[in-house]
Image (tube, rainbow, N blue to C red; front, side):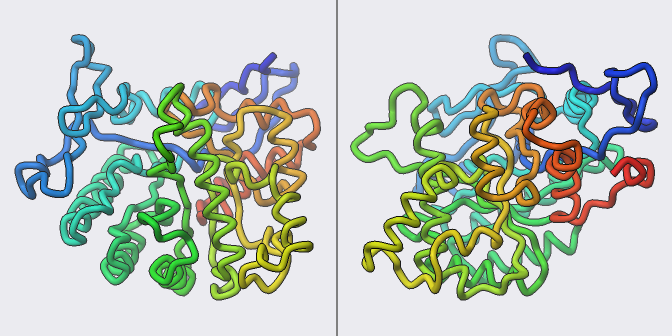
Length: 371
């Protein structure tokens, strides 16, 4: 049974309701959340649909102004609600779950990497600037990651630098571009640029593999395809030599607890040891690269979280909820807070300190006293 979250006051410190004598609780950062505005420019009219239909929002779904349908051309893609665009609702939910700070990132359908780079760059600039405007409504409690047109690495590098200077805390990218995985020349060049400029990178699965439509049923593109995509991207970076080519100072985090990678690391390691063709060009076994990246905590189960912490170390796991989507953590932070195998210090690190250090988010003095 989930323990009720601590009470929260946006004006002051937060205190646990568990004892008669309140004591401060740690600074909490949710580093994996998404946003969608209720409307954006009509890119279909501006650029045409030669490369495929554009996403747009159909508001007032069912006559409810708090609900909308994310559309892809004339096809319904996903029902969404006002937490995606309503900052007041977002702050209300943060208060409910005792979250001090959120990091927003765009929904990957907005990347539009299959289009000409200049079109995708226009889209990226719009949503990047809009994200900063949304954060201004957050009373200092919101930050954001930018998006980039990664089909053209030079344009992507220019945009990530512009956005980072403008106030973004890092960049979110998809885990592949068509057949180009995270060991491709373009991906390596972009990551090298981010390492050089000190820009944190979050890798989010998208455009999921779906051979012969086998994952079309039961939302399996999200429940099976996404974890597989994340594992594929981590493995391609290890065996493809990406980590060996990049400066270790690169700050890199994978969404969804690293997908299926932590659970299957043993299989990968065993293959590396006993089959030379399974080693790729990696200079050391897969387990030797665990210190090169972080993951979020979006695994939804204490057994899975224990495995993740055992593999990665608690210092490389950060609270991430996938808010405000239905497949995200519904009471944010409850998985970590109720994990009886974690110490209070480990929980404090995972709930906020790790993310604050990773994304360079200042921790208020009152929270520092409890750390």
